[in-house]
Image (cartoon, rainbow over all chains, first blue to last red; front, side, top):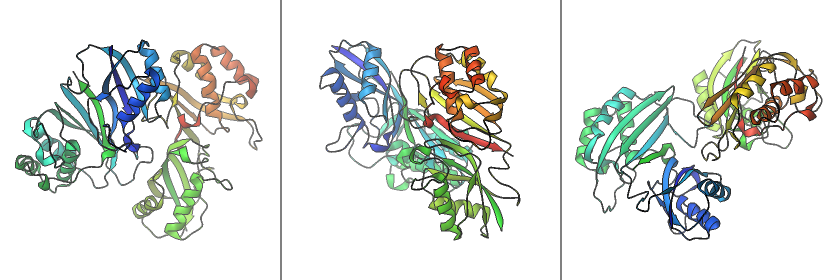
Length: 244
Length: 244
């Protein structure tokens, strides 16, 4: 029995997120279907990040158990041949028996992309949030610094039950500008549901001057989702990588 | 009467090219429809490059005549509000009365994008040609140098009638690598139908070692489309800019 690791890129536009949901099309379903078509095995595919509906990935890490004797490059080619063209396997390797894409991950990194100008983008319309009003990136970076550390991020996350509490550790939270494009990179040991999008929606408030860095910090401390900004659109979010 | 200049970005996937064709959906049709919706005028929209079906643009230049008194930023916003989201106006300005996007252009630049690796890309699947076999970029660059100058490019272009002959002047033809991505930038005073795609298809022959730089040069000199390589897929091609 092999423990197969894949690195997967996907355009999440057409899917209801990574994780299997009854009656809905998901990335996990497509991967499990592809594995079945190639190996004949009904394996469960686990992913490092349970991305929401409409969220993309360039470096999602998944694993599954298989008896397949196909070489890694052959398996990669075969999976890509049967996957829809909005999901692509970029790398395939055999991992140690204990490796689990989700539970073994020490950290995950996401990127949120904003096009900050009057004109929308035709080519990137599915991969970035178009925001017209000029954003003050320095102010957003200042406020982002208070995210780093071990904190309770309940203010930024979807309200609902969680079995693991609302405290996580953020290692870094950094904005970069390239022309009219703003990129927010955030790495943490784990993320609450819609946490990055809640953070970005609130940092946009900072960028427009509606609140300042102190106000952002106070919203975080309050642990109350009702105080924070709107959840930024899913299409701007992309799962970058997981570290083990 | 104003002469309005627009810089337009589009995802050509859903269109039968730039130029109006009976019964087919084109970029020109969508732009003329948008201008009519905003100004009430049935203006002809002229473009610097008549891109083929499936070809994209990030800097297409167009112009049209209008009596509209809308300010430039207002017109940009209004046009974007009625255009489909795969076409975006990035810039709007009033040009001199003599300006014509097509006839005034001194040169045009195109980019052709290739993903050169085993794994396809999910996010860029509509914007690059996926080519698995390893390409020798140095050999392709060597061969490309013979394109520069005033030459007859009949070998690389769609066979058919042309009113302006098959000689053009190529100012530059340069390959760049970024990881697994190869980009071909070519600037010329004008291009024959499918000329860039014919050149790229033949340069891929060079990249695989099927022909060398001398063979490429001989194909160009022969002025015979049957000798050259296949027309590279439209989706890898993007109109970058026009110079005046």
